[in-house]
Amino acid sequence: MSWKIGATRKIPAALAVLATLAAVLPAAAAEPERIGRNGDWSAFTLQRGGGKVCYMASSPTKAEGDYTTRGEIFALVTNDPKSGIRGEVSIVTGYTYRSDSQVTVQIGGATFDMFTSGDRAWTQGPEEDEPLVQAMIRGSDMVVKGVSSRGTLTTDTYSLSGFTATKKLIDQACP
Image 1 (cartoon, one colour):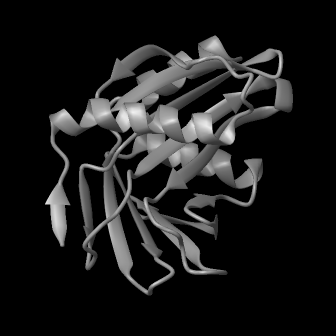
Image 2: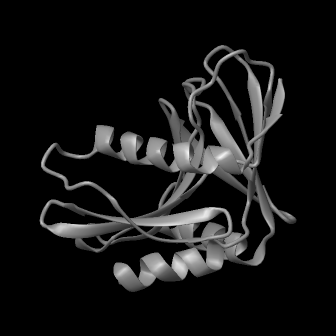
């Protein structure tokens, strides 16, 4: 199955990001507040653990794979000054990844590997996040490939339009 995500999917996607974050954040966390949108990326802030967390999110412009159902899909970049996190890249894929699998991210000629856990993928740490974020700033699109627990290969293409301006928003809000 291959499908394109139109503009009407952007608002539900943003709401799903909020729901996803609400599910993993403590119950005392405040509701996220949208602080801006540029191109295909939206920026949000929320209060958590006595500090402010900022993140940006986008859904893919194209999602491909031989599947019948799939949950919401997002790329996220998070700044959490209280935890010392700045520019943490993660992927929420809408299905459970195959155990011990890796996700491959391609931007231009650069390739990055991410580890998986459940329905999420991350780099190994800040030393890998920074080059990935720099590639996202310079790139025009990002292709993310992963394998589900059922063995289905998926290929998600994200537009990087608006990435740089939106990253500046979260960097200003959560320095």
